[in-house]
Length: 289
Image 1: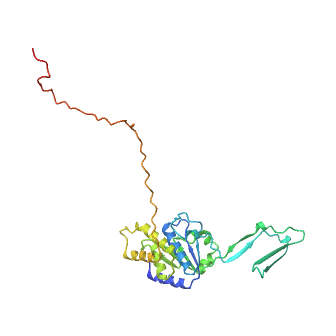
Image 2 (image 1 turned 60 degrees about the horizontal axis):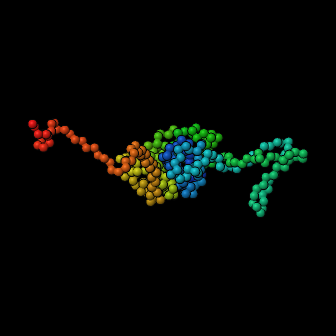
Image 3 (image 1 turned 90 degrees about the horizontal axis):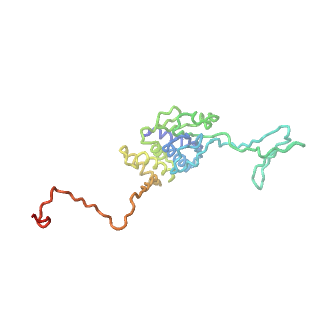
């Protein structure tokens, strides 16, 4: 089971954190995706400002899991920035004003006399500057595997508390929650959500229960513990729905008619076995002279 002291420590961080990142690898398996998406949905339900992200969209997406459509490939969400092609010799003045009635911000770039106005098609709008008090790395081996989510945001990771949730001994993270003693990562995250007092949605509970059922063969596994059954019962009380994978229907066997239909009744062959010579019966043979 997950370390009780670590769960208490994570709960303390959650109590004060407002801006949170939940990060996964693009190659995350079903269990990791179920656990991370459930954690994200629970944090969001609990009123946290949370971003669910991966360097690239996951490849092992399961349609039964809720929340995976919320995964972003960027974490820079702090400052809005607008950029455009700029020629200093062509610009006379840059100004802005805020419409009192429309409550909109207007930026005006005035060209110099005799010069063309800036090309509006070159304008790009986006966000820069990630912000987080707490970062969950679920099933992530190291910072470098997060690619651009980490590169350029190193200071964010340095300033925030990083919680690594893995089923192996992690080499990074301020808190390293090893779930190897749990039956899977989803059961450990269910334990974390429960003990941290987070609000859990029905979809989040369903994700966790689905992953637990997958690993236990719908609770037929001999490795099931009383604690796991208690976790499953808690998830169902929180609105988890049991989902069974659609089983492939057996294809009807193709029947080939090799025999032609016979008209009338089929004739049976009668096999008469000979038992040696026929016995002499009177009247069957001619009279002897």
